[in-house]
Amino acid sequence: MSFAIGYISVFLVFVSAFHAVSASEGDMTVQNAFDRTGSYALVKPGGDVAFSVNDDLLGNVNLYIHGLEWASRGQNDAEIEEDSGQEGNTIRRFRGLIEISESKGKRMEFSESIANLTKNGFDLDYTIHFPEAVAINGYQVSFSVR
Image (cartoon, rainbow, N blue to C red; front, side, top):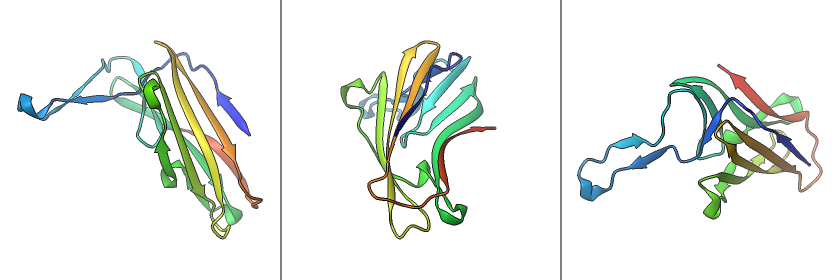
């Protein structure tokens, strides 16, 4: 099963948030690599997407699954690896496994792709797979607004 969240026209996705100064230059401070005035989306190491305007966090996007009894696990609970390759500056790809609560160790597999389309938008795509039959109450991509 695959679904996509298409073009979101207000935000700039930025996939490489910080650059560190090298040790030979002395100071090891971390500097922002882009202008934070305006709206943007940062992709965190586990694939979470955070939306901000200036330095004010507006919300996040995460994948969740609800096992029986509505026990919830999310992308933050997953075993995740990044698979962006050479496209890492414009496309970030993640693969992961989320163990489903109350399922005797069964898991949901997922992949996530975040692509920078233009200065004003990005494409977010999730693919979901269940390697074996499992009873669940539901799963969703959650937009949390702060």
